[in-house]
Image (tube, rainbow, N blue to C red):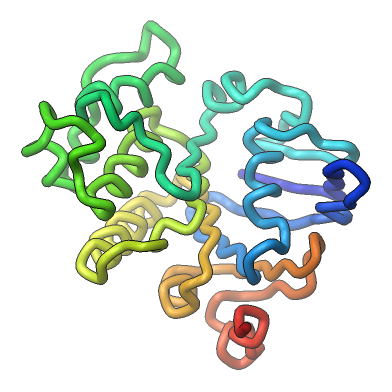
Length: 232
């Protein structure tokens, strides 16, 4: 579904991404791991078109999208849940969800898919409440739901457990598992919570100082001692 090949990006005189290459196949969760500041969020922004790519290729379903605008990528089927949620605090839950549907072609836009409320029933109860009035965990559920209403083929999650209470983390984990069970969606999960990433990952990729330093199967994360890359 997603293929990143020899991706390079610069910030001023800093070489922030160095020949980054990996794949995220459909029906699988690919966990992208690493300490703070190693380039994970920068990489996601390059995949979504929020930052330019200096060199390299971003392939989506066999098409090179490295020069497409973010709106074009969203219309093709890329869904993005940024770090920090970034919901529209002054809009209602329903309005936030409708904003997520703006990525769909007008002819296909309609009501919010029912499975979104099955995953996150609290959102249906709070449709008329403003996003800023929700708890942090509820806002994270809203951010994920906002990405899902566009029915993406690739869902990118940037640290979805950050600052979230354990009960909501379990809800998010169940939602991700149900999406993977469908078999048609690729999930790229950036995470520092090792146990959460290990429980979901079919594959893992580790970054350090802007480059990939390790990769493998999720089932091998413990034996490969991946945790050492996250230790301070």
